[in-house]
Length: 467
Image (cartoon, rainbow, N blue to C red; front, top):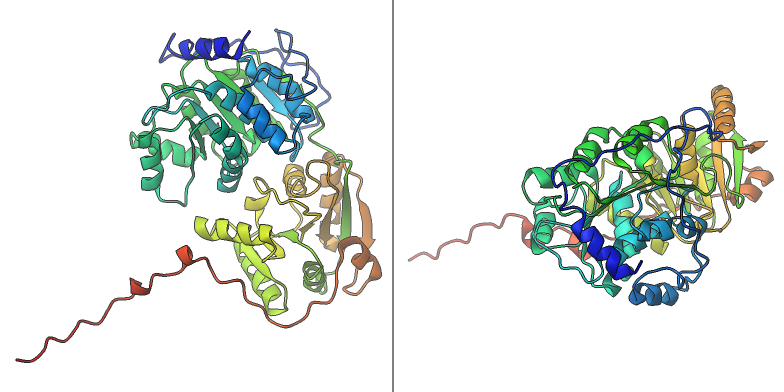
């Protein structure tokens, strides 16, 4: 079936039965060896199409193939090879693959292929991608931008923390694709700035985190407004029982692809548990942060992140905090500085656990261990991406050893363990830890658009001349 025929079919599809949800037949669960907390993947009634061995073999517009080749991409990753033949044919897709395996292009290319040659209408997008965090939404848009441009697709990002008026104006001008966090998209829908009655394809990216963060009511409300007959795709690195409700209610006979275990170690990633005493924990973390090269370090709370970043700056480490208490322009600027190398130690809460891709990042440190194995996997997923190597190091206090043993067991990881003092040679070998300079440093000055305007301060009234 040709690409043009499928596009015409999908154009006609949503209009049929508009305003009512298409009937869904709950798929019967089967045992798939999923660990506790993961649901049994549904059985697909319609056989899946065979995987693709090259992008050239896929039924996609030529400009997309040329752009892929221009980026040096000729062979799809495992999740792309498995899902693209089916999503391009209009099938619903349930995809599970570890972080960093190419899920964005797996759904993005299918969306853009269906939007090629289409006209954008004011306030009425044709495709929607939902993401749990602002950073992930922005990352998706950035990753898809060159491909969208090649086929004349207009995309916009809709997230909180940014001026809603600007986002509303973009929607009024007409876009094909909206990449959004659920809360901000709901706000724009309620304002009348976005209407979903023409949406033909919707993607839930990192669906398990959206349910974990309490977005289930908003996601459900959005899905209910999408016309029946469209294509739904759900992608995630982990699939837990909270997602089961979405799959059974909104996906119609989905093609199921679980191309690699979401739980368990990535073959190119090393895991280390570093046992430390409370007295030396901060000193050990400081030496690791002072390493040559970049590192992301996770703590539990915003206050702890700010304190650690200030401590590192005072000791000569170019560090910056990243958490939900900072404005979106601040968060965006910090990520840009980290990717450029102006900041070498990114100190973050779980807000950075998904949606951040930095080439060549080879170390992630849990200063505070996570309490959930999924959080551990997603934090660690910032390194060892796309076949690169990397290490995840977790600092473990004596009272946390039992919890970490259970967490590693649930994640199906066998870590290496060492006891560390600040100057240990083994710590330096594993992490690159070294003595910080001790010379305080300041972060680079903000970009001009982030500086306060010179005329922002009130001016003194001019004295009127005496007559």
